[in-house]
Length: 293
Image (cartoon, rainbow, N blue to C red; front, side):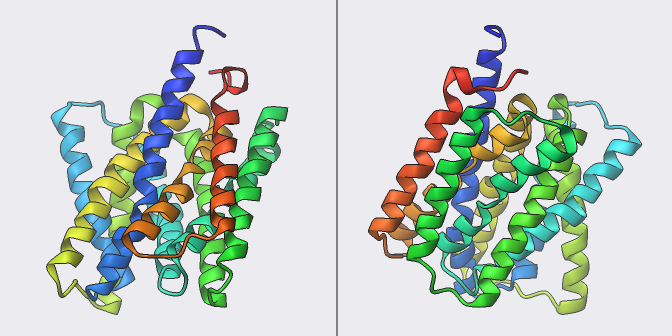
């Protein structure tokens, strides 16, 4: 137990870095949309740039090539799971505020916990349950204060949560701890190929302003390459349930960044919800609450 604690705490830190990086993505996306880019073009640029950079890192470090079976699994994870989650999430930002979309996505920890228990027989400890309740209570407080979004935005955000749940559960079983870079490269390639096909059919709509190009690059570099690698590497050390709970830092980052950079209102419910989400993080990272291995 004592020898595993630093390993697990390191995983929590990596997942937290991933959450901050993902949390900034809605702000970058809103800037890109204001510059005239479409959702499918934004996501094609995101995953194309990210795939090139991750493969460059892959070959520069001379990492071992995954097996054919693993490569196929990674491509499917990207082409189905991550495409579904990212498309629903980013499209929802056209209909709802960044805060509401982000926090609706964060119904997924409950789904991951239930899915892990049903599919993988993972034990639901008292600390995990407390963290989960705090996280969901905080999320719903914020949702309550921002319940002005249209029905399409709400449905798309919930769809993103469902896709992300399946994505996390499957990736926790097929992504090994020593395959963080390799898996991320092929996952992003799979997503890029699908969104490339969408651009062929729907048309390529690049941003009309330099700010949109910069925002798209930031999504690729910060909210994709850095975020995905940190999440996979961290989750391999913590397990899917703890990784999901630590990732609840993401909506807090989104709410704060939206208020500062996009002038979205910060109500009392948002503040109280953010406090509950942070409290869930504190429970998660307590030594007694860390997972084994």
